[in-house]
Image (cartoon, rainbow, N blue to C red; front, top):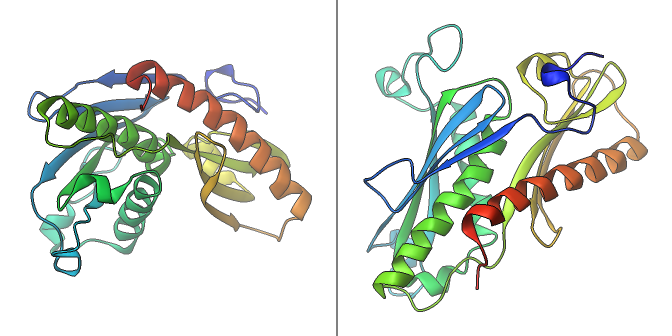
Length: 241
């Protein structure tokens, strides 16, 4: 089948990372994967949620939103509706879990890191792009805190990135765009660390159940894509130690 950007089944969409996009925080990046664009910004406050008070441990949480014209038809702001939708809540929890998986929360002290992911334009893979870009924003924030002497060591223990893999017209494809995602017989998102450890897999048979062998092949393809994404993260962040 013909793919956007004339990609083969195992190719990522063109990836662009605009680091230091904002001047208002030390950690920010705009990640572009094809026509999907997400602004990720990390900030920190010297407080923690009540359940962590006086534990000496920090926290990391995420918020996710889609701008009104991030899709062809205008999305009303959730603030105007008066509440967040279930999809938004599920995605921001995923982003938070993924980034906490590679963060030493005790090294933060009693501080909270906020990772804000705002979708500027959506063409599939917004949650996976948010995780990949969010890691860069957090890493840049931590580097700034180290320079200022506010923390003694880098809380990041490893890299982490995310990618989609799906089955479309009986072919396993890496990094689905919206058209492919909407036609997929199987759709999955993979969150994987730099050490190749799996943080989370979200997968669904959209039509008929699929075989274990298909999942194994999807994992292999996801690992390949994640390696490429983490190589790009390393180019910006450098060594974590």
